[in-house]
Length: 408
Image (cartoon, rainbow, N blue to C red):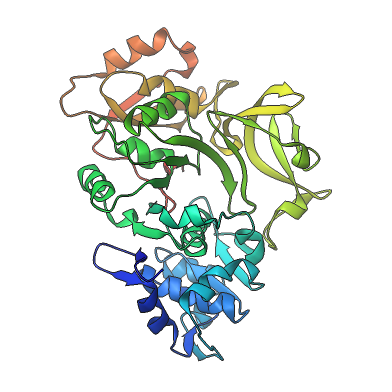
């Protein structure tokens, strides 16, 4: 136990004994906390959980205006005294699943005011694996730690006494690959956008045992490419939201609904609905007769058992002269072109058709592509009205605070 390391970033290493000393202080930030310091955030989370206190985590990238809109400014980062009797680090960690406190987080707010969602900690922790085998895992942390996906990785590492490496701080793919090797990372969880940022590459790895994708739509091309890079890894595709936490997983791009959840979801006009009890508490969530509209468009593959593939977000669909264009479909077609690193398809208002399909493209520096090449390739792949009318080659594509391509 004493040689286990919680490596929060490339400069800070915490053994469990170090953690014990840090936790012994009798104060923490409560109830609203905004920080760039992952170590401090984790320590405050543990204290809140084991004193049954509420904690509210605010994205460090939220502007002051967003903080005000969430009604948090007056209570932000207030330090208070608590009654905290620390015994041993392994007790603190192993008892995390028994916590009854509440954790409040926010959606990214990239399309409006962030939504406030409160979850009971035991709900977020109950699905975590805490077997002895899990203590040998080394997790690569790529998510923003104040959002749902980041919290789940943190809790998994703490509850299983695993090592945690903060890959979120590394911005260049060469440094990420080096960190995977240097720290012996064997579990990685990230958005598809993060994984695409690592490509193209000749890098391969035999040590990584699990690669998880989540947060946005994944495609089979990306999944198969990850299997080629991480040769011995099981690749898992996860569906999770800030509102519900993790719900479904798949080995490819098709999700199967287990029998115990068959009555908790429904699909109406291709949109996925969830039963209200699956969600955290929020006054910002609108329900329809105890059902929550996710805004996710799905394609039903099988009725019994229910299997479906995620297609798009309703808010992302582009209307071109009465025709519906799914930007994800167009992006997947573009990514099949050799030399394309990433693409973002979006709408631009037009007085004739309502919208024009536009596209930003990042190409491999060694590749010579132009607009004509892109259009010629797409003519054999997708309908003419889906082909972007404005194509721009860019150095980078903006991502959200949660590591996904920014859509609006």
